[in-house]
Length: 250
Image (cartoon, rainbow, N blue to C red):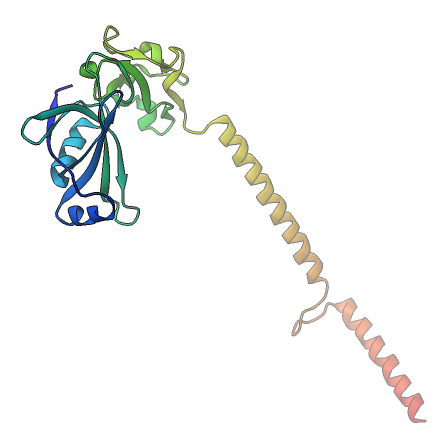
């Protein structure tokens, strides 16, 4: 990866007063490292974002502090404002160029997808999005590409051991048999079982609802005409009531 550079200035403003720096377009930062003296710095916000976009968390940056000092660093962390989403602080980690470091490197899929994916029969399932590597800071790479053109049949997979990279410079910290990406059915067996269960539940609910409606239909609702047997029964009840009323009157 190409070495990038970023201009910085020593920062005397600390604590809550750094708010004024941000208002002026400056981002406060902190440089630290193993066996090195920590230092507070500030950088131009727009320039940092442009550099960070190129370097990511694996790129080596020459942090030029003032007119003379240059510290080889990597961006170890960026803090963001929870409301605006804008960066508010940067952690720069100074590295020893002769000492290996461990960092996560993104895995990027390349190559043409199989026809079955285009037809909606299968999906390309990426189970690893990044992988930890160990290397000298100057040997680190921005990403490792994974060519998926070889995936043709269901369960075809690419493992960590099949990744293409410079094995003399990078040491992968993940077992070689671990799967990076595989070709899977668009609807898995687990999903089919779930869909079947959901369909069975829906059918049971529909059957129960239908039974309740049938039972409720046996009693005429207000304004409905009763069936023939019910008419006769109602007439009998009415006759009995009239007979009782006549007896009481006598």
